[in-house]
Length: 182
Image 1 (cartoon, rainbow, N blue to C red):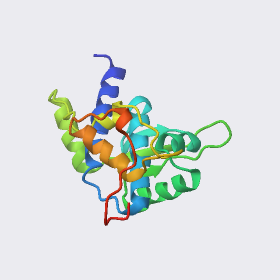
Image 2 (spheres, helix red, strand yellow):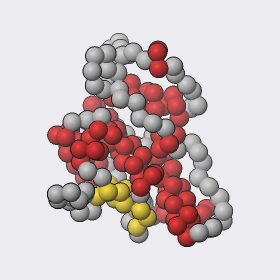
Image 3 (spheres, rainbow, N blue to C red):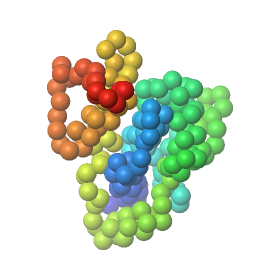
Image 4 (cartoon, rainbow, N blue to C red):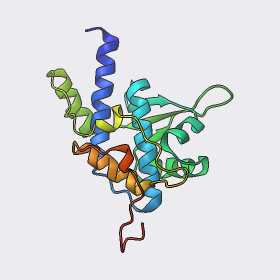
């Protein structure tokens, strides 16, 4: 196997592990769900364009493009990046864009994740496909326009997809959960 292919495979294994960890994280309130959407968008972009560095996976993307991928506004994106950096410790900035050059983010990996994945990769094992579906599936624009579904429903659809379920696009409509105010 070519070195570039091995590196790409290793990046994807790490991203699958990080994707599975999204479900273990506590995403409180609407701001938490926005941060989750931004993190999942970064995972998707990194799956195709990420580079492995010692502290994690580096992905270069313009802020406007990331906002579109996550389905959020630029001010909401900036707040979500702060939450992901300082509250959750999942990402860090790695240079800021200027002019035509995009900035970059690093999706951080912990010591346990690095050790486990390195051992499994060397032994020829692959990470479970559980959690990787958000990386390879296309994002549906759920939040803008009339009849939008919202962040909570986006998470419900991700959970359904993670469990192997399918939902016809014609049956997508806003859900109301009584007593939860969503």
